[in-house]
Image 1: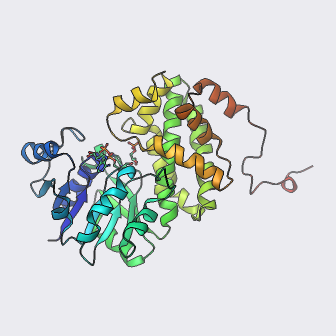
Image 2 (image 1 turned 180 degrees about the vertical axis):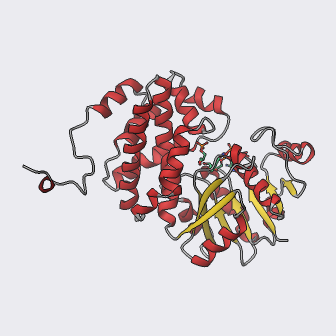
Length: 341
Ligand SMILES: NC(=O)c1ccc[n+]([C@@H]2O[C@H](COP(=O)([O-])OP(=O)(O)OC[C@H]3O[C@@H](n4cnc5c(N)ncnc54)[C@H](O)[C@@H]3O)[C@@H](O)[C@H]2O)c1
Ligand SMILES: O=P(O)(O)OC[C@H](O)CO
């Protein structure tokens, strides 16, 4: 049986290790923190990030990243976006020639505004790349709850290879050639999930959340198309699928952080209380800059940016969104000629 390396012993890296280990692969799980690494190997549980799930014996946590990647064809990168570049730099000279990086993080690098495939291209230009994304909370995947995802790669055989590696009766994987769309859908939905949480924290209702999700989807598709994605990808699992789960689930770290902010906690208090990565916070900053760079209107992202980074009042932000200039629902489809006069 093949050996697979997973980089990052947080909730998602651990959940994917369980899926693959149950399939029979031997897993080397690189965990940055040595105490956590030892705890995983002795307790057979990731107590900090994924409590209550027994880890199969064929998962070996290691603190040695070079050993973890050595001779592996499939290297799953499950470190948060802000750590990806540094991790790639540390492994680039130790990789198998056939290695494929399977990124599962959902974010945009703030300083460069690059997607993760672009960071990989900069750091290890020759390596094969795929992204695995979709509506998938670690807490459910680790407990064998049926889940569907999409493996995207520019190369069909790479997307299909990764599909085969991960596919189980409880973990169904589709393929898609649109790496840009899949990366952006997964990253940008976290911003809208923060907004959905803020709305819940303010005590607003289902109508408000549906509005945020729907108009959030419109702005994700708008910037996505400007950045070269296929608009249809946003109608798929990594787009609307992930937007739905993240905006509605109590597993979502982004939504839960938003709820706390809506209830009046500061960003710092909310982040500390969640205790896990809340990717949407940094992604909001990146997306706000991208909307300027591509000259694309992203009103929800803009208001969330102001709440997170300029201490704007959340209730005023809702008023700002409700009182924007009147407009057609779907600007590029509806035009004046389509109305009866
Ligand atoms: N948790 C989920 O359900 C889920 C599902 C799909 C995708 N994701 C994505 O997976 C990525 C990881 O999320 P997670 O939920 O596992 O996070 P987490 O907070 O549970 O764990 C993060 C892990 O990364 C490590 N880490 C933090 N900074 C690092 C750095 N600079 N270098 C190396 N390691 C670092 C931490 O020590 C920890 O082990 C995120 O991009 C997230 O959006 C998460
Ligand atoms: O817990 P969140 O908000 O980081 O979301 C996790 C996954 O992206 C859901 O698909």
